[in-house]
Length: 118
Image (cartoon, rainbow, N blue to C red; front, side, top):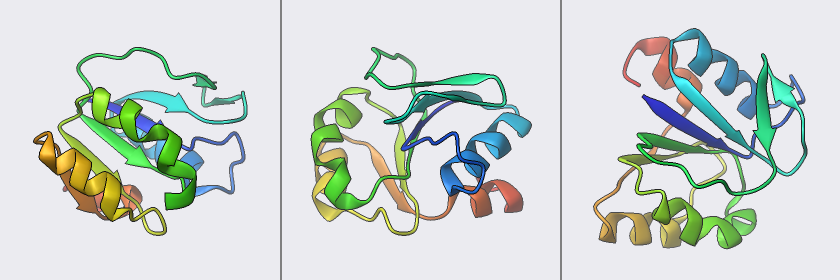
């Protein structure tokens, strides 16, 4: 399953970093998108918005006010679902996604992985 982490950070203290590590450990294909270049466990962080196909999940680590410029890109990826991690809840984006048939979940990616319901 391909998962896109938006808001990825090379800072090991950030939840996006921890989620990327956990996703990789659980065998998921991970694409990292962020504002600062770097890498997480050998995976480069893209600072652009690459064209991606076959996206299963987008997991968000950007606050709602920092997501506005990402709305069209995220919906255009046509993921099966978007995970709004704590602090990233955004009803406007969630409505746009649901209108396109994309599932939305308000949950923590780390918790979902740890309990086996990712």
